[in-house]
Image (cartoon, rainbow, N blue to C red):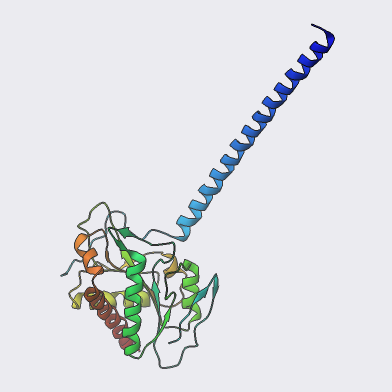
Length: 267
């Protein structure tokens, strides 16, 4: 082999080794990128769970008391527009339709929580306003509003009460059913929840015991607040009822009666 051939061979080996090093560095970079992406996704998942807590019933099924079965605040992007100031002598209620937008809530066999809650809230708004109450909505369309923004709307509205409407689920036992109210560290909230539950019972709606829970919209709201689980989408019979306009009207009558009855008694 001539000197020139040996030199060419050395250059070829160097190029080959250089290509291998480049491939190795590129693979190492891809691995580091994937690891970083996994960490970011894990952090995002933790933050999402913290911001959107599940609202299935207590882990081991709380005892159920089973019976028979307009100024508006809106959200533009992330900024909250306060509602009109409170008028003395007038009861003002903030209504919150759970979930919305890309946060559908429970979705079971064609029943979607965000749609059911929106339908009930709009009917409830109409009913309460017909009784002389002022109503503020945290959302009036299919959009996601953060939990803290919902609480901020309630706190800025000069309202008397905050009512958040949700649908429940319990996949371990589809026989579980019932209308259920939650409050957080407030005697007024507890009394309001009891009043709404009693009204539901009087309207022949299956009910469960009132419970205290640290849900964000309850914890961060400064006025008497109640989160209502209107029924279980995992229960076939109750799911059918919740999709029924007639049953939604019955729920609205019961909830409105419970709120206004409590307000009259405490005035």
